[in-house]
Image (tube, rainbow, N blue to C red; front, top):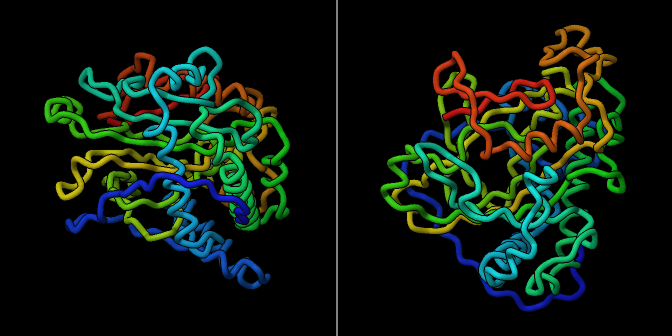
Length: 363
């Protein structure tokens, strides 16, 4: 990512990494330095395939941004929260329920978490085309950098999609062609800030900050940060922590990728809980790139895959009932954390139906 002009930005100081002995998930590592050769690409495709088939998450290293560049992006990520007054934030509030879109601000206490407790999470979401909408005044000097950052992430997204297509023995650009930069989609950069809660709310919510869920889109790229709070539901049914890896990315599959891959790549359930004792009282600042297919793509499995011919397709709905990305995305966005969920027969699981698809939420 090339940045020609840099405006001064206040520094965001995160908490130091935890020293507590946590049970971490064992995730594969995709080293993009190997992606320049056919042999390296084949090796990475195997790693990515196995990771998303068996667990649903993996790390990426050597992604093209230096540590100072990444740290500057975290400084910029804090601007919409710490440098914009509340009155101006309200002017850029996202039309989440009205339009099923996260573009703009999601305020704190918008989602219901558990036990009558609402979230303490503030997000600011920017379409990958940063000129698509207006932004708060304090953020405007950094829009060129954010635009470069979005393009850089989209390049990483395309590399991941190529690896996943190779893993299914499909033409390399199969998924890339469904995620064009210029097409209409809700692929965007999210800046996300978690604020500490009261002890009373922690008890009521059972320390859950964001209940167990799968992501809506195809591929999520999370820029690793030091405050431990993210957990995944591992194949053995246990919640395991995600280890912070300095200047690395954490990648996971979402619902759309699970549908497009016929269930081969799993949208893994993950949640955010109260950090370890030595990190409590600190805010948790995150940067995420949410990849989503083009809005008009039908969520049909890639049945031409020879891998799926061998292992079979795991269906959540019949092909004739497959929703488009747009209808599924808007439905899930508008309902998340705002509708009353039904208790499932499975323990600690609540469900809703979105575009004919049963969506599970885990407490």
